[in-house]
Image (cartoon, rainbow, N blue to C red):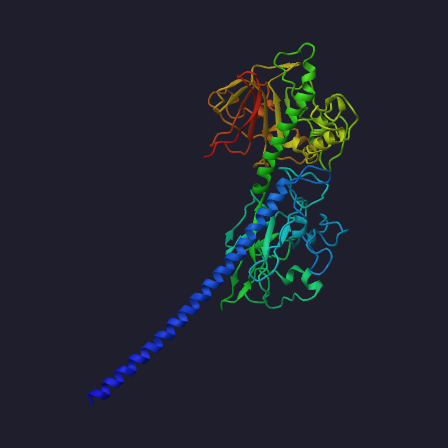
Length: 511
């Protein structure tokens, strides 16, 4: 009898072991599947991040030649694999890429051939797509600077996650480019024919609760297949049974990620151009006798309300518009074309004139090619979002320029000039009309300083144009507690011999 009981116990133990092994196998299988899915997810995220780096680096590095706007993105590829134009920007090699009046063409695959980059795909094997907000696509005729915004009815792009519960953008920092990973096709999506492969709806979904269900309305109306709507949702979104109703993954490029570095580049190239002009042209006004001992030969500012400095619409090559004005101590930087002279009538004051060509340049063609690099500054109207002041000019003697709220270099013998970038418009700042663009308060923000005299304690920088009587020649770097986004650059004379001039960047203090 005891033997029977022992056999039964052994059988029960074996059954328990079999059940245990089955449970372990199921757990291991589920765990392995989970690891596999995590790896696939990471593969997609890595591809999205790589694509963002490529697109953003290309936009910021674009050179300033004809028809090229640094900061713009190539138009999406609407061609399909097997067509001659596949991988190229736009739809067909001879077709305008993504005109403003055709917002549907603002979404398509990333044109890897145009970007000279290897095609990136998500973990399902699908090429990545992109959507470009109006105004930031290639070959548009309007300027691209800190004030660029989509023209109505085209929207700024917005993005969210967690079915719309988590915002991925804000009204103060909207999205200029969305990069999308389609994932595998869901129910109702067909990707066989060329027409189907050109249709974003066969790759991307809207925000819906059930597979094949209706798209949700406001405030959760997100649709990844529509650049016209401009509201994108990062997936996945699952129904009550765990089935995906949206499997797209989304990564964004915000305006601040593009415009911030682009504005810094504009400031740097203004400084380079001013220095070049001072060496090749400005130095000549010191001969034979300097009209002013402190005149360092930099170009004079332009009048802030000059029609060429405040114009709206497409850029025109007006002669003597937003040009250096000898009677002005502070205003806007002159349009870069008014310094280079490329495309304007010959004048000794233009850098392009042969008499101003450096001896180190091999030919006039090389000299003009070099100067063309600065054309993007005027074609994109960067002078409108900068303030520029000289310490002294022959016709405008002010007290010595004083810089507040900053640690000055130990080798500084004197300040020669100030350049300030205004950043994107802050709350209450309007920059649409000619009158609005002539008002300094619509560009520079309130900057506080304990040592500035009343009534200029908080409006030091703005007072250069808008407030009367004009104060002393003071300019302040923004402190951490100041609300705004201005950045200050200044050129100073070094006390070391031989005397040299240097530019320094004084960004707003961090909180």
